[in-house]
Every structure is written in C-alpha cells, then in structure tokens.
Image (tube, rainbow, N blue to C red; front, top):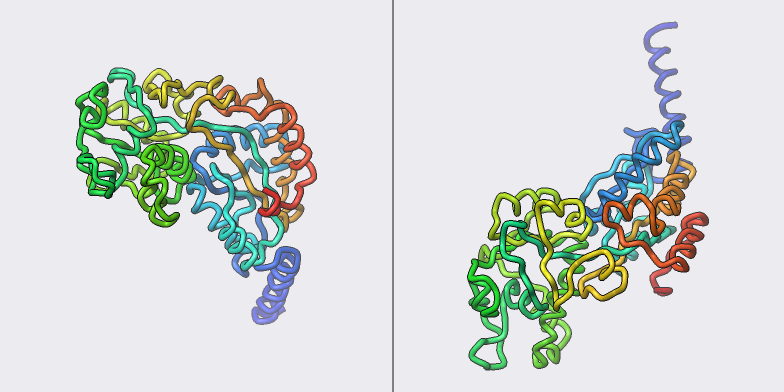
Length: 358
C-alpha cells in the first residue's frame, strides 16, 4: 500500500474515533479523542479533602487512574466547569460556597444542563497568626474596620471615609499596637466570598445606618476591601499563607479551618466574638464564621470519563465524611447523621440540582 493510501486510511480511522467520542460527549475537541482520568478543579479549601479522597479512590479502585485536581478557586473552577461539555472541560468542580444563579445560567448557556450538587460538610474561616505572636480576640466589627476600603467616619458623621486605621490598637485599645497586615484570598475564591458575607457584612451591620443603605450601596460598603497595602491578596495557595505567617509573626492570614487544624504547631486562630475556631464550636454552630462545602458533578460526563460515579461514592462514604471518617482527621466538620444520609443518597443517584429548590 502506498504512503498516500496509508495516510488516508489512518486519517479516516482517527476521524472515526473522534466522531464516535464526540457523539458520546458533545463538544469534544478534535485534538482530544478521549480522557481516562477525572478532571477536578475549584476551591482551595476543598482541595486537601478532595486530594485525600482521590488517593483513597486510586488505591481502592486500581482499574481507574487517580483523579487530577487543580486548586483554581471556587469562582474560577465553576467558570471552567460551566464552559461546556467535552473532554477539554472539567468533570467536577469543588466549591466553598453554593453555585450562584448567574453561574447556573452560564452552565445552561454552554450546554451544561444537568449537574448534581453534593454537600460534603462544613468548614470555618479563621484569622490566624504565628503561635509566637499575641493571640487576637476580635469582634466582627474589629475586622470590618481593619479591612474595609471605606469605613464610617470616626468623628461620628454618618458618612463613609477612606480607611484611616493603620494599627489594630487604633480600632480597639485592647488589641496589639501592631500594624494591620492581613494576607487573604483573591476575589475568585469561595473563601473570599464567604468572608465578605459572614465577616465583613457581620461587622458592617453593627452600624445601623450602614445596614439601612440601599442594597447596592450596602454591599459596596461591606465587601470592598482596602487596597493600600494593609490587606494583601495572597492567591489560592492557603499553605503558602501559613508559611508566610510563620516567617512574619506580625501578620494575620485568612484561610479555612482545616489548614489551622493541620498546622496547629505553627499558627493559632483568633477568637471571633469570643468564640475559638475549633471542631466543636463549628460543628455546633457557635463559631460565627462557618460555611458549607460542596462539589458539583457534570452528569453528561458520567459513564464517559471512567470512574466519576465511583469517586463520588468514595467521597461520600462514611469512611470519608462520617463522624469518624478520614476527612474529619484533617479538619472537615461532618454533616449531621440525617443530612449526611440524604447527601449519600443524592451522591449515589446523582440527583439533578435545581437552584430554585434551595
């Protein structure tokens, strides 16, 4: 057979493979005829839990490859997940907040019509510093006044002014006279979203006239963090924040409780409104800065990319997310028994998610 004939035969064979996979998985790239490893993106907070589950899944299911997981942040992960159906798009996205209506609309617009939401447990957001430094006792108001771009005029007028505070003691004389220097998550992070909602709004609302502002003005006043060097966007790598705190004892950092749990020899969590960030206070709802954690599954990829269903079942097993599961050992706050059983049934069936139901 001549070279032209061989090339023609090879070309028809490759096209047939691509067409076959493309028909099964709409939107498949011509450059990628298939994928045999699960692609997971999203929350840096959920990342350590997902990584441990992936390792367990790989050991217990040797016929499947260990999933590939990238900590892109909740917002970035959902954006990639909702980009379309096909091997060039992720199968699962982790999130430290619930998907929004606009993100669901983006998914639908791009053909990602069927997704399943799985809640895995709870996590707290901590403000931590090096164990060699003073232990902070903060109120939500203290944190808001330290980090907001504009704050209520300290002269008493009902107006917002550029944040004048440079030291913690200027906000509250009981706090250290250290410069306000906080490392935290970027805007794409679910931790940043939850921090804005739970901490910044919580402190913002202690000023009645700010709470009474029109919604758009209120959110701008509460959510806009200062950009004058006292708050630093430290990226999606929470382990890096922990390392920086150990090297810079006068700084504070914002990250998920699980990282505090794993690095308790290096850092300590500030009390918030008098409550310590620990397993029991978060599980019992006493700690004021806690949030649920999720992952979302693209149902069009189930059965097409091998192992997705089995990975989901492993993640939601009692061995992983139960009260004494291996994820609790690294800081996940488990769901209550009834909620966990409901989520396990949802994971097994990969029930469709409808935002209007929540």
